[in-house]
Image 1 (cartoon, helix red, strand yellow):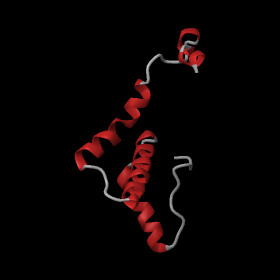
Image 2: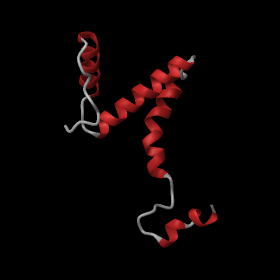
Image 3: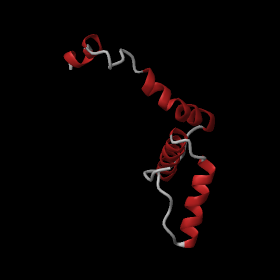
Image 4: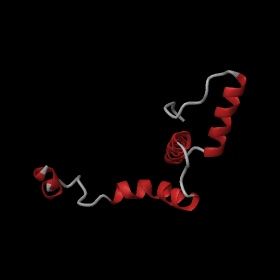
Length: 88
């Protein structure tokens, strides 16, 4: 792995730090710290899925609450839920 550690020296498109990855995780880490995390495997699964949906909605400039409401409405009505993969 030694060569991969120094890739940023030879390539301009590789950052020497992991700041982007850390910024992406910051909101989740702060949520976990404020809420003391979860207490079960189901809670972990729910939190990771909800955080993924919320983060993806924000990156696509979608309203998180509207998207989640549409998902719940679709589940209740037995219709197809909206997709995060569909074009906006």
